[in-house]
Image (cartoon, rainbow, N blue to C red; front, side):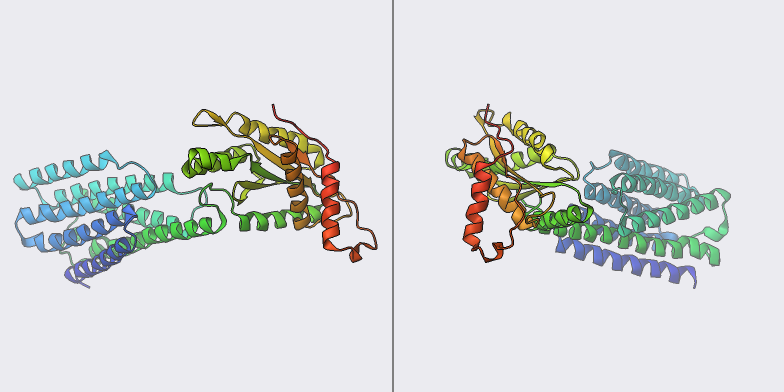
Length: 416
């Protein structure tokens, strides 16, 4: 393969990348990073074409072509910064302006091709170093395939530019644009061809990985509060109950209800009510441990699961939850309180299912509200089932459980 064929292969490949990036931009207009990446790909196509043509053209064509390449790299960097929610780098602007000035001066002084290659490769290397820094800072602790691929492609392009810089310093004729040297063609065209393909693929994978993560998050989390939704908290609670039974560890469930929440909506409006729900959810989450589960069960009601916490820990948990909310004010004026019902997994015997646990917690919550709200109540341990209980009607069992929870409470904390 000669240099001209390799150059046009690079142009065609970059044109394909530009079309894909443009399609990604039109498919996701709100995502600003795709706009930068699509614009960068188009600029690089123009830049590579003008550089190839400009080998025998006036210096102004070479200046425009090389400037397109540099500003394409700047747009790629900005796309990464926008993607990871970082401010756009002002240093990139300075690099672009400095490159244009120096390249223009090199043209005026009749500098050799090696000097232009040295300037372009050095500028692109600095932009790639900045991109690598953004990737390392923005990537999560658990690296995804897309992030690793993008990082690897960036490293490959950095090494390629370092080799170009070394060749320009040595003034090796094998690395001139229209070289016929296999090594020169590989470094100037084939390695960048593979690097840009890997880099563009990595960027697209980063974007689609984010889409998948966002979709999975919406499937398991409440949109308003950011906590687990009902389906996720039930699934998580059932899993934790199974683990607790298997490992013979304690577990406690709490139902939390915001007191007089309807008054907030009626007096302050539904927008204020949404803010209250989100704020209370965050306060409850902050009052819990990392291993605890916090979810919005429905309306103004939340469900909390405390693995490893038994009935002896309920008093501390209840006081902590009440205290977390007690200082909260809507618009710094209107106090908000909560009522909490707790139920712990029976040590032995009785119904140890998730449905029984949340049913007892719900009854304890009802008791806390009946006693005046702004307090917590604890459901009594359910006794082991008698041999003839199987013939008892479900309504009788419900009444018995409710009476047990309403008449026997381990701890009741009043307001104030």
